[in-house]
Structure formats: structure tokens, C-alpha cells
Length: 485
Ligand SMILES: [Zn+2]
Image (cartoon, rainbow, N blue to C red; front, side, top):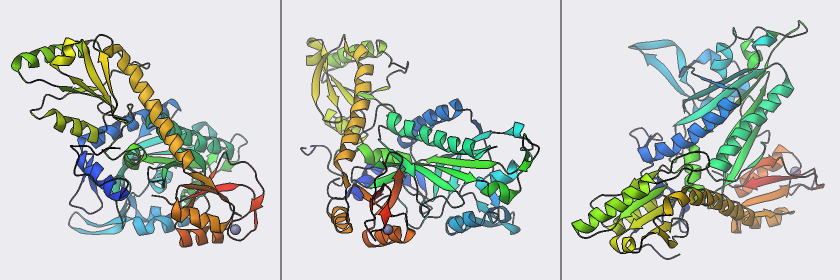
């Protein structure tokens, strides 16, 4: 790829991926640092990307029968302590309010790191009978987890997210719910963000504190590292029992309901940047792109400006919609700046198509359409353009997904020995499918010695008798190892 004559200030992705990421997030104006270390200001362009995935996820969650509601920001200390494993897992990350209203509080209040404890307490009186189940709740809010090492969007002290919380009469129903939540995330990741994901189960070590098990989807970023893109937890009766929730079942026996919780956060904005971006900045999938087509008028004289403006107006008036009836999002850049400056501006922001319209193009009844991914230029007739844009955007969306999938496949390797494993981690990176006996000691050793962790036990990993790469004990199937964000 040739260097852009306009972009001079982004760290090269191939030289320093983390530096590139930070440059893109700041310079594309997705977010900025705040006076509080580890917190971020989400700027309008970044927030619009979040809103797009949020709205789609919200639609999917509601379509599966969940209702949105709200629980408070503060969790009394005594509530957080009720589920022992939960508090142990979260304690190092909890921020506490100990003084308010001018005096020390009798009981410290946690700023929610997640809402399981508060919700279990809150719904106790609502769940009396099997007729009150399932209870399907969803919350859009912010949470605080005191992180030592932070990175914009990927790991911030405060972040925005969605947390679903549900209660069910049976374990089977709760297990189906865990799958439903994960499926909502898969759809948003793959169909909205064009990020292919692998779904599976977390190991005991990696599961959510207080859960029976955790399922998750994992994605590969452009530096071949893994990113967890959404988690769904089977809570069993842990939180119900801790809070003393009981319902009268059909057989007149009192039982604790089975719970689930699942979450998806603003970290996915960072994932979208890292899954598609290139040396010139962001590459956004059309469905989440706040602007899908940037029009750059090219003119010198006032006479040309008027003619170009008229042509642009005609194109805008005739714009079609995509298959789902969505209008194409267009921005016409009339700023007092050179075309080159504008090209750079929209490339950095990952706008899928740029349309250049100038007097010479107009004379030929056409305009130049430039595709962000390969920066190819195509002269397109102005008459046909408005109606072909939705189809071009759909194709672009599919191409991004296919490109990410091919990249992931090319960077996924099967290894059978620890020696080969260490070589691949060091020299190539990516996803590694390797046999593991299921022992936490082996898992820890690999993490300590190579920095790669078991991301997931993939759902589609077939039974395959083999020897654990660490200690040679029997392994039933391959698990997915990678260095991760
Ligand atoms: Zn082992």
C-alpha cells in the first residue's frame, strides 16, 4: 500500500499496533481522555457508532421478550458481600462511596461494577410463583471497574453497556436463555459490525465470578490478538439462594429460581476499530458508519460551484434505500478546505465511500466513487448512482466480513506439541487450536510461560482424542488459545 500524501500523523499499524489504535481513536475523534485517569469522553462520532450497535442490540433483545428497566448506581456493601465468589472476584475493582452529604456513611456504597447482587435483592418480592417466571430484564447503564491499565474503549474505568438479568423456573430454560443472549451478540458482531466470532464456553478460571459457567464469543483483531466480544453467564441458583429468592413451583414445592446475566459494552467500538482499520485509519462497516458516503464537491469558480451544488442536490433527492428500508447516510463536505484535506479527513474516519463531483465529471454526466477499503476509483453515471448506492453498501458490508473471516482463517493454526505452540505464539501469533486436558494447572502454566490464554472451548470443536500439549494427559477436544485484549 502506498503512503497517503495527506496522512502524516498516524503511527503505522504494522509498526506499532497499540500506538496506531490510540492515534486513530483520538484523531478520528471517537473519544478523548478525561480529567479522571482511566475514564474517557466519548465524542459524537464515537458515540454515533455506539448508538448504532446499541440500537440494533436493543431491537434484538426486545424481540426475544426482554423489557428494559433501570436499577440504581449504588450497591450497599452488605449486598455485594452476599455471594462470596462474586465479591472476591470484583473486590479489587470496586470503587466505594464512603462519605456523602457532609458526613461518613454508616455503610459504604459500591458504585456498581455489575448489577447481579442489587437485582437479586430487588426482585425478591416480585418472584413468588412459577407464574412470575421467567422474568426477563434488560438494563442500559454505566458501570465502574477500577482498572490499573486502561486503554480508550477497550478497558476503561467507567464504561457503557447493556446487562440483561433473567430468572427462570428450570435450569434447562436458563441454559436456553444463556444461548439466546449469546446469539444476540453474535448477530450484532457478525451482521452489524462485520466481525466473525467463535462461540464457546470459558474455562473455570476465566468464568464470571459467581457464575456456574460463562459462554462467550471471541473475535480476532488485525494484530491477530483475540478480543472477547460478549459474555453470557449461567448463574444457576447462586445469586437466588444468596438473596433468599424462592418461588412456589407447580408441584407446590418452594424453589430458588435459576438466573442468567449477559453483557455487551462500549469495548465493541474499540473492537470495530481494531478488526477492520488500516494504515489510513478507520474502516467502518456501512451498517455502523455514522456517514456512509462523503460527497466532496470540486470547483474553482463560483459558476462551477453552483453547477456542482445542483448536481449534488439531484443525487441526494433521488437516493434510494437499502433492502431494510434504511436511508443512505450522506454528508456533503462544503467546508472551506482543499479536496486533499477532505479526502484525508473522511478516510481517517472510515467512511465507506467518497463521491467526488467536479465540473469535468459533470460534463460527462458522471462522478467518481472512491471505495475506502482498496481506495479504488470508479467513474459512475450520475443518473444510476442514487439507486445503486444501497446495493454497493450491502456488498461492502459483506466484503468486510469476508475479509475479516479470511484473515482469521489465515491466522488460525492447529498445533499438537508445546514446543510448536510456543514457536507459533512467539513468531506468528493468532488463534491456536490445541489439545488440553482440562486441568487448571496446565492452563496457568501456558499463560505464565507464553502470555496466551484459553479464550474459549469452541462449540464447534469436534471430539478428538489427543494428548494435552502441556502434560500429555488425555484431551477430548481442542481449545482456542490466543494472546488477548
Ligand atoms: Zn494438561
